Amino acid sequence: MAAHSLKLPYLAITGALIVALGLSVAVLGPLWGEINALGAQRAAQEVVQAEQQALLQTLDRKKAELRVQADREQELAVSLPEDEAVDDILRTIARLTDRIGLVVSKASNQSDQTAREYRAQAERGVVSELPAGIVPLGATLTLQGSYAQFRAFLDQLERSPRLIDVVSMHMKSSDTDTESLTIDVRFTFYAYSGT
Image (tube, rainbow, N blue to C red):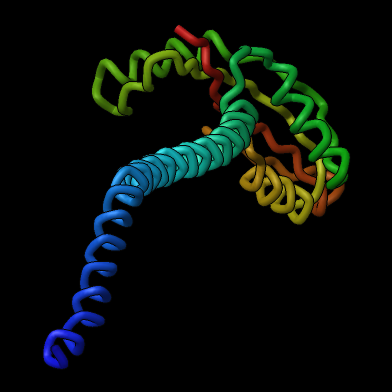
């Protein structure tokens, strides 16, 4: 009997462990399914969150691109305006001449002649065709002042945001004042017609 009594506590403990293990599997089995479902749900939420974060980053990038594009369009509108208003360029030139001290004694609109000449030169292959919608415009000014003033005027004109070409210049010195020059300048500038 002594041999049986030593095995009995081990059998009881083993039986209790088997029952406890069976109960834990029976109780925790459904919970494991819920835990796995919660893990899958969390993984799906992380994917959605990552997609939302990527969308927000894309929107931020697009917003920055639109700001840059608006700035570029504004710069383009200054350098290549959509209207053919000759007075816009003449106002720019008038501000420059006033600041530098040149006197504008005569101004004439040469836009029709400039457009005809440009078309004729393009047909002969002397100049390249302008992109669609770009219209060449022209003006001739007679300026009076010193060589230094005229040089400063050309430097400022070169820095202007408008696209301006100096087509021709004719200088005459004054008979009475060697410092004073009369300069006839012909300009070509451009506008965007939108067609």
